[in-house]
Amino acid sequence: MFSNRIVSQVFHDVLSSTFPQCFSDSQHPIPARFLQHLLFGQLHFHDSETLFDQAFPLPGPKREGFVLCDRSTLAQIAGCESCDLHGHFHALEFLGRMQLVTGFPLEITDYNYKEGLAREVRMIFPADLLQAAGHEMRSRPVDKITPVYFSTGQVWKPSKAMAPYNRAADAHYSMWLDRNHNKVSPLSLPILNYMRGLTTNVYAPFLPNVAGLIEEVQQMPTYTPTERYQRDAYLRNLIRFEEVGTLRPVYKPGDHSPRVYAMGYSLLSLPRDLRRRVLVGTLEADLSSAHMVIAAYDLDIPSMKALFMAGHSFWTVLLEQTGAKPEDKPVLKKAIYSVLYGASRTLTRTVLERIPEAAGKAFFKAPLVKDLYTARNNRLSQIEDDSGISSLGEWLELTDFKSEPHTLLSIHAQRIETYVISACYEEAARATRDFRILSAEHDGFTLQILRPQNVEGIKKRLRNAVSKRGKGIGIPLQLEFKD
Image 1: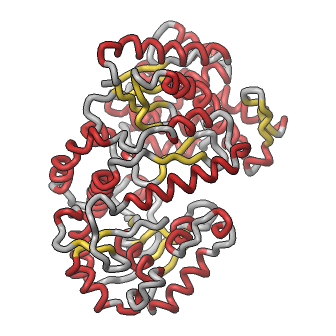
Image 2 (image 1 turned 90 degrees about the vertical axis):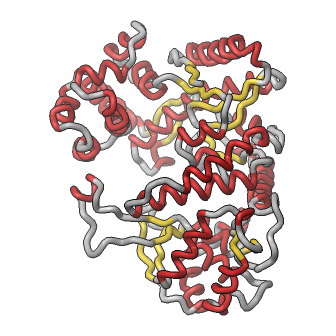
Image 3 (image 1 turned 90 degrees about the horizontal axis):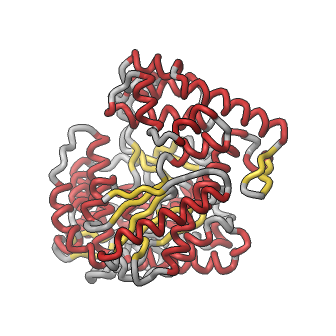
């Protein structure tokens, strides 16, 4: 279901007089929905200040103000988001019809996303209208003078703004899961079933923390288009969370991955520091160096196994071997993941341009990296020779994953990760009075302790569940907690 944004009556009146063709028929709000997406959709800024764009500049002038129009979003705008209709929806044809109906002079370009099915769309709006739209985006509905729904102009009532979207998404994927139970990876079912069982008021205790944070984010610096986009994205999600905070989070299964993904308006779209300030008093848990441990034991890398058995940190040792500084760790993590899952050395070098040149050169000479390259190449060759890979007792065919060995290797690691972390959801389902999991985050989760006196016992219980399941498949993963 497409989200109907709340705007002030004054702004709606301006839009109605400027674009009457979008609001002439309240029974068919599709043109109004499309206008809303052009004004408030996910903007893509191409900031030439980044190192990547300096190395690979885009031809022509800077492209700012483009809105991503992927097939799924356009289908929601058109009211074709149901499973039966979505499969027959043609995004480019829909954009052509919208041009005819609205008369908008749209600039449409391809966007390298989902095999070219997505488009970037831009319409040149008057500067004063864009300024007003920015103000509408950054203000909460409760602060607007006579707030109304964008597409219909009907007066908005508190606590009923974004709720229909999350309820519709919840109902849609619950129904889909019931009908297609056999199509969902058994590895992700414990997670999906647990998250579906949460009560609708699970986030209610944290809502008082949101208002002050919204005011703080409104004051964030916005010197570049990227900073403006980030600030507005954070505000948008905080405001929506404030409106739907009494609803449980909605999750769906991945298309080819055993992972689950958040739908609707989720706190997971916020950066970690903001998310932690909303969920005050909760714990974060995740698998320690999950993909490095999986690589060490699944690819059988003796040097890495010895490192973990000795209790050393992979990242600390890598920093020592490269001479990089602790603040360079995020870049090194991206580079290591690109090595692990099949990226070329050229692409990895591009990632490493963000750290000192000496550390970047030392990266490829580091013993850990050399061992990882050798083991990775051997496994990719084996996958190609065997036309697949055995993963937790199931054979995955290479042809089912676009004949890309590195894609299959990544899916295999995700299956191990999901299988091990799901043990915590099974424990949570048995201990509903002690603790609950508030959000699923691939190799981790956010945990609310309901009986603080038992917190250490709860941690031990979850650590043991992860350790037992990991050892059962020969990969000794461990769970770590952060306050």
